Image (cartoon, rainbow, N blue to C red; front, side, top):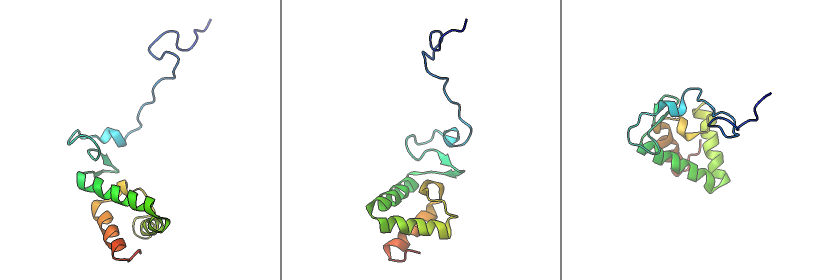
Length: 105
């Protein structure tokens, strides 16, 4: 006879926990704690970058035109990758400067 799921063991009726496949949280360096203390795609994240990422995300939520400007910039300069966390701090600064000056390309 088979035992019912969760009757014995720590899972208590739940499937086994998933295991990481590398990258992401495995890249945690433990420095600084909280948001921005891990790396994504090998690019270390700091407080300055986290602030830029937050600005770009807020800008995208502020209007469809702003979101379109970010997407166009990504397509033209960043290989089509729309996640600001995956780009270097300098690229984020460049976009924000160009956008604030009205140059949305």
